[in-house]
Image (cartoon, rainbow, N blue to C red; front, top):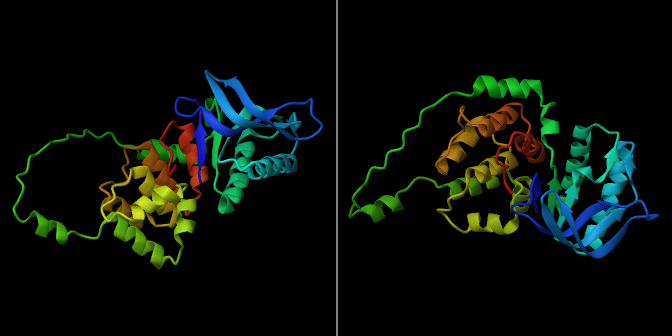
Length: 279
């Protein structure tokens, strides 16, 4: 399914599982009916995965712990799991921690359906190491625009049905054509786009489906489209990449570099308080 980055529990409070730290156990263990306070909310979970790893000293140790976590997820048939970033005390660089969790999650989601919620309550600590080249790209690319929206009423034309029948290629039609041209499967596309099967099915089965902008961009990344192709796909849904939008500038930056890792891009957007792609 998908990887979410969250810094509060306004929308999410119940999960199948949560990762917690407990040094009293000799090995990892799963307990049931776990309820505790995280941030400003009471988080209610069916299971808690208690780990005896109070500190992570290198990449290999963290990967072992994450493998154990996902093993428990599979054994207990969990559909959602919460991983608080501060569960572990570690000497690894904080960005390296996020990178390792992201990659291990990606590996698991290739063959499994799971919603992973990565809880980062103090994301401000991560922004200070934002790629200076990316920051400069955003700062110099943003434009101040004054937008005027006008509502112009139009009388229904008696030939409106004829107009609709002669409509250009729709977003859904272009998307399905691109999938065929790229010789990709639906599963490959929606997993890379960080959206679930039900959401993709709605798109596929509705010629006039109106997606959110973050969904269109996510699908463009999944298909590894160029800037021009991305703009065209966005245009089919009534959107465009704007130089007055931080999110759009981040997306443009990564596409121009030929980097299409939606998890890595979402990580940056999360730190910048922008909407996440896909999800």
